[in-house]
Length: 233
Image (cartoon, rainbow, N blue to C red; front, side, top):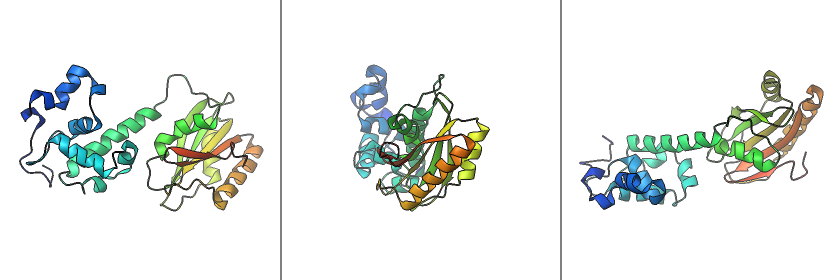
């Protein structure tokens, strides 16, 4: 039992019209509110509030923003009154499944034709992080996506990306081009001098190896900066 819970009120004890599970079965997922969907994950409320009310507390802690909810850690969630570790783990796991679904590859390799295409392939990995990570998209000669790989992870202020590791992955996959990306948890989309210097190094190394560096993305939540679009390559 969660440490914050005592004599939980189960969904089964509610009247039929207030049961999110039954509502989903009768009307489908789109008929449920965000709070009702979270309530299904929680399963129970507490001795004083229902699971739906508890779900509303969780959403309020994230400003009723699902993107912000995905950024909350287990520790953050357990600060919500009525949410113990088990419930927090369930919420985080469900959001991670949604993130992985967005990142799952289709049977046909995706063709990258713009910075937006690149962003759509990497946003799920970077947009909710509270620390910096550096990733690379590996492309074949037709600019179709071969694989997405994480290069490094760091702290809130930055992460180190080694060009040797980046191009090792590219050579291992026989990639003809790469797109690199990292996030700024601060939300500042301005490229730092180190970002600019690294991009220049990668372009120079790519010329020697005949692996073109097509773009460098800086991801800030649901927005991004493209070096290619900004004329910075």
